[in-house]
Every structure is written in C-alpha cells, then in structure tokens.
Image (cartoon, rainbow, N blue to C red; front, top):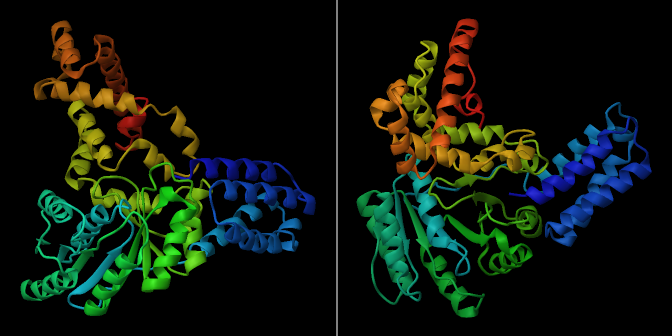
Length: 439
C-alpha cells in the first residue's frame, strides 16, 4: 500500500533532514518533488494544488526556516496537511435505529458483496446482529453468492427471490424487526458503468427504506476514476461515506488521498485483503503517518487484540519463563502471526520497517510452517528424537529438502540457548520467535 509514494516522499525528506538549515529555495525544491510524487500516485491535480499551497504557506515561514530541526518541521507540516486532506478524524457508522439500514452502492466488480460480508463480520464482533440481503435482481447468481458467503461465515442472509428490489429490501427490514436483527446490510445491483436505470433503482430503494448510511464501495485500483465515480454517486444519492477496496493491490493511493477532499464524504473503511478480517476502520491521521513511513502501531495493536489467541500467548510466555520453548510453541506463534496477514503488511505498520520488506522472504516462513506441520506432535515437543530417517520423511512431507529441515532445527537449538540465557538475565522476557530464528 502506497509503497512507491512512501519511498519517493522519504527520499525527499531524507535530503531535507540532511541540511542543518533550510533556505526558501531548499523548501521550494522539496515541495516540487513532493508535488510530482503525489501526481504520480494519481492524486487529483486540484487536490495536489490545494495541498501544496497550504504546505508551502506554512513551510516558508519562521516555523520552518528559523527552526533548529527544519527537516522534521516540514515532515510534521506535510503529515498534518495530509491528515486534514483525508478528513482529520475517523467518522464512525451511524447505527442509531433498530434496525439500522446500510445501503451499499457501487459499480460491478468493486467488491460490494464481499465488503457487505466483511462489514457484517466486523459488526458482529462489535456485538451487533447483522442481516445481509441482496437487492441485485439483475446479475446471475448474485443472491447465491451472498448466500454462500453467509453460510461460510455463519451470517444470516435474507434471500428472497423476485424482480422488485424495493419489495425485497422492505421484506428484509420487516424480517429483521421480527427476528431482532439490529443492522440490515443491503447489497445493491451494480453496472459496468453508471447509468440512469441503476441510479433510479437505488434511489427507489433509498426512498422506500430511508437508510442510515449510503456507502459507496469504490475500487482503489481505479485511481482517479474512483474519485469521478464517487462524485457522480454523491450527486445522485447524497452519500454518507465511502469504503475503499483493494488497497492491498497495486493501488497508488490517489483515491484515498483525493475522495474526501473532492466529495466532502468521509472514508469509513478500507479493504486491505481478501480475508473477512481484512476490513479496517479508516483513520486519516494513521493513514497519513503510514504514507510518510511512520508506521501505524495503533492499528497493529488493535488487529493483534482482535485476531491473536490470548491463551496461546499466555502459554507461550509461561514456556519462555520456564525455558521450555519447543517447536510446537514456534508453530503456534507462526500460525498466530499468519492470522494477521502477510508479513509485508505487518511491516507496513511498523515505523521505519518499510525498507525491510524487500529483505524479508515470505517463502522462508512458508517453508518453516510446512516443515513444522509435517512433524508429529511428539517430534515437535521432543526434537531430539528427529534422526536421519525422520528428517527425510519430514522433508518429503513438506516438499522441502533435508538441509532445509536441518537449518530450521539448527536455528531452533540456537534460539533455545538464547531463551535460556535471557530468561536468567531478564526474568523470562525475550525476543519473538521470528527474531530468534532469524526471520
């Protein structure tokens, strides 16, 4: 996410930080490079013009030029202005009614159905009782797709068939009232492009049910086109917010940086992967810091609290304290980490760790998992029994080589010694299994 933009901006800031004192010419040259980086990231040109105007106004004043740390001051100004550009504060969903109705709109292929399911999962975690309903009577198998997602995620789906989407949604709301569901998520029909028939259908649904939220699901990979789509939908439907999908793909960041400034509508969530848990609340300040390579530790902590098994973490800590670190412990920790997504995504959220992404080999973690899973429980708990014939069996079962098994076991033995030493020195507090095994 934003890798190219972050790299370009960090190069600019590194040059500015390298100067003990900045002249107005230095600031002007730096801002010119920032402007080019933003334009290359497909940020709307009017947005870039407004942003650069505000940054320049602050950056060429005494606040920067007379500062003892002028480079850092410029970074702070850019961070503040990016945050304001994206909305300053997080805007939560409006869920005041029972049931609250969330109308999800957008073009075909933007990810409306998948996002509806992701949002329902998130609401359920927050203690809500969501109900999904498909109002798409045009696309073949649209209702079946939502039903399949509902079954796989144990989410209720109101799956009435018919040709009138208004009647379907009205029926779903009545059903929600009868069954005490407090949120109804309406997956509306999309088209390959905006047309009057689609808009009139959505307007008819909106007039009939008076939704609490009308959320545009926009594909971030379409860049400026996502901003144009958001503008049109807002003019026709008065959006209450936007959910950006596919920000984990080759999205250059233009949509995320432009939509709020152009439409005035807040981004409420971002989709950062295919898994159901990979829908994140959008925090403008955190996103600005991620773009500038400062990381996003708060989101990382929140994600860890949501996904990691507390019992396994407590057991692992106890084993470390007793110097009883086993291969089973290492397997448990790797599997817990994988719940949080690819390692590159975790590095995105750690301050200054973005540069490590190219040096991290995801395949090594995949190999380690395959090797550990090919062992028996007895072997993971007592690695000393793993001889030559067992290593060959483990290598065959994991699709690796014996030398890969030997390398993992060697690192395990080194880490076990290190843990024992640190347990004595620091009361059991040590490094993570990934660090100990050189990953």
